[in-house]
Length: 214
Image (cartoon, rainbow, N blue to C red; front, top):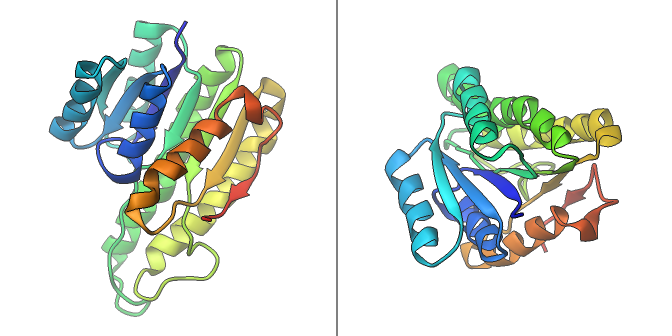
């Protein structure tokens, strides 16, 4: 039986590269994204190439939409083996220039989104006998990046969220790790290989880890 893998932010960028990797490995990939048309296109392209894939339109900042997505996946497939949280946004403004609305939007997508996906996705993974969660961090989560205070703060906090989830759900066979993607988009496929490895049996004893960009 094919594993079922959800990739949020799977309609573009690093999320798309990760979705492509899992699909090419034979996993059934759910391309989850707020961009309905692009998400469907990515899934359709994979299906046309002979790989198992489908799409789900979801705003990861909405608990109702996130819960409904996982309920729908459970109804269709009866299991969930891996979750990759790649959906993220940023805005360019210094600490003193960043507006409250911009700050909140970035934190909602980059931190609340993974929290909600873990909240509703981890029980499904545990109920399937265990599996893996990978959260996408940032090369700048500890050092900062000029003009992106909300983004770097959200990604730094994401590491703590992963550690907490890894600690709380280790006994259920759910592993949670963070991977920081490279800045160079041409290297996204290499990152996707790392994510796939962390979700495989070959990383059965890896949890609570932060994998920095090479």
